[in-house]
Amino acid sequence: MPSSLTQRKGIMVKNSQEPIFIGVELLARKGDEILLGLRGKKAYGAGSWALPGGCLEYGERLADGLCREMLEELGANILPHELRLVSVGDDLISGDPEQHIHISFELLEPTWTPQILEPDQCDEWRYFPLDKLPGNIFKSHAQILENYREAVLYKS
Image 1 (cartoon, rainbow, N blue to C red):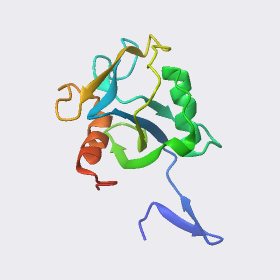
Image 2 (cartoon, one colour):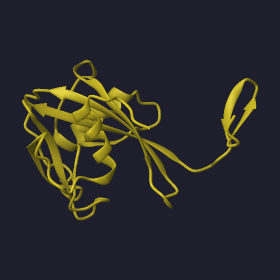
Image 3 (cartoon, rainbow, N blue to C red):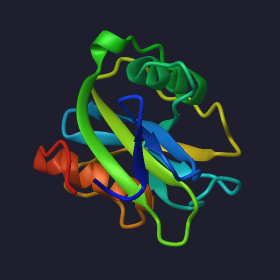
Image 4 (spheres, rainbow, N blue to C red):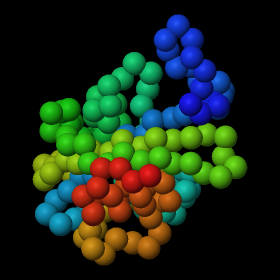
């Protein structure tokens, strides 16, 4: 058993106090194109292209959290049953006290037009062919896109 875990009353208890965040991302696909947003000046990773998404809030189910984020970011009214799980990823950044787990879902042929509702976080939304993505992909989303293109749910 890893040393960071101890057993108490039959439950595995985590000894570390570092936070773990759960990110939920959307792969909105129209034909062979995927929606990406250019991260704004105040966003972490400014100037890179990223999937729409955000962090799960306490008490939310994964798909519900993603639907909330898409309404807030894109003005898109998405229902949980329209989503398909396509990627799970670890995001361990050396020297960063935070750990992120990314749970990503696909939505095929969205009928809505993405809106810029958080202009300090996103400069524009644009669809890109999956085989011609821009070179400056947000580092945390590169593995998600690779998993998606390779039809692999999780890579360690």
